[in-house]
Length: 91
Image (cartoon, rainbow, N blue to C red; front, side, top):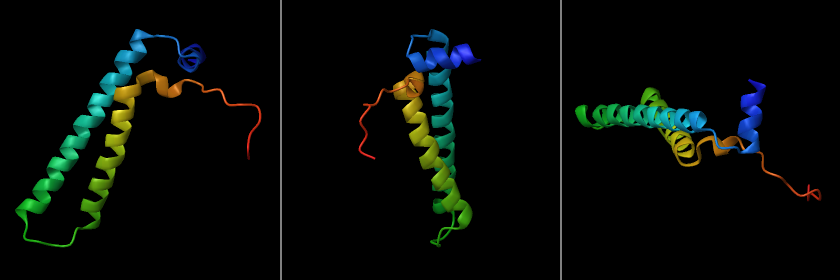
């Protein structure tokens, strides 16, 4: 496991990780589509009402999973690459 994490942090190309992260991203985006489809039907089927806590939570989960899924889809294993920072820090 440490070898896999070190490989991700070094930024080496690893096709297994590329595929796994992209498939994970597509699964997250599919869950987002299901969340928003359910949320749309919740508002369309009922008469106009204030959103419930469950509807608000469903929308929040959709936004968080959507941004996470897009990050994994665009960047893939590069999300875990170590980024060097300068020795002099401002804070």
